[in-house]
Length: 367
Image 1 (cartoon, rainbow, N blue to C red):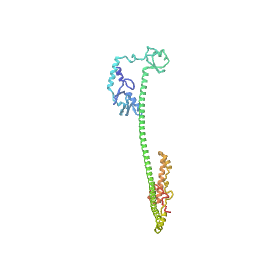
Image 2 (cartoon, rainbow, N blue to C red):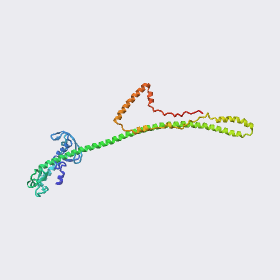
Image 3 (cartoon, helix red, strand yellow):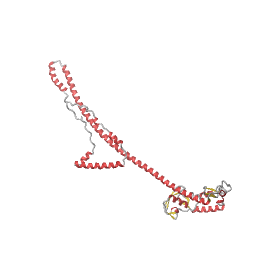
Image 4 (tube, rainbow, N blue to C red):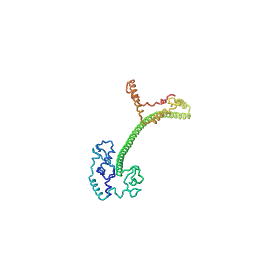
């Protein structure tokens, strides 16, 4: 019978079920009053009428935490467990016939001072249960006492209300935890999205720098090739002149070895004339000093480095300043277009300025 009694105990009031209701679909049972108290505690703002909740809501089972959606009848819309009620009636009949009344139970606690007296009153002054002998002859003579049953019902009601309040408070805390978890997920998603946007912006900036680097490298390469082609062409001219002069020198040496004076005199004068012409290099171009220098293509990124180092996220003040700059730029563009008389000027002004030509690119033809 004790095992059966444990199965018929309500988990809220810890007493045998009174009008038990079954919570679908978890199949746990509660007293209808206990279930109603828990539901009202967890839904304090729902309107009530005649002691019962008149609108639906969510009810969470205190045994397994399973959540059930109630209709407009609230807890009173849950099904009565008639089978459990019949078992309780049978148990009470059997218990009444086979066991003594609760006041005569063998396991009723006895007073620690008067070992033969059972505890049957409650000292309100000391807040402890005691026996009648302690009230008449013992340490509780001047204390205010009350029957155990009345105090038992009061404290049992307080405990039931506290349990219902704790269950409702736990439900609210669980709701806050769910909201915090959702906030964590939102922070992770928003952070990942913003990180992707930042990486995309930097990739775009890298692409602009790569394009500009390629453009400037091409300009340096073009100037390098132009100078190399000029120097190589001039070198070929000097090599041709050297080859011609070398042949004249060889012819002069052969002429010096001529034994016949008449033949020598016939060859010497024209040869001297050729030597004079070969000695004159005024027709060959001279390379200006510093022509090989290309320092005018140097770059200085101090300002750009400072600008890149100051890259940061946009603030409200930055957005307002950017709006003012855009408005001022549009006004300046309209004025420039009106004064120049065409859109071509505006288009050209938006192009990057060309790199300056080196000052010593012009060939020097002076002797």
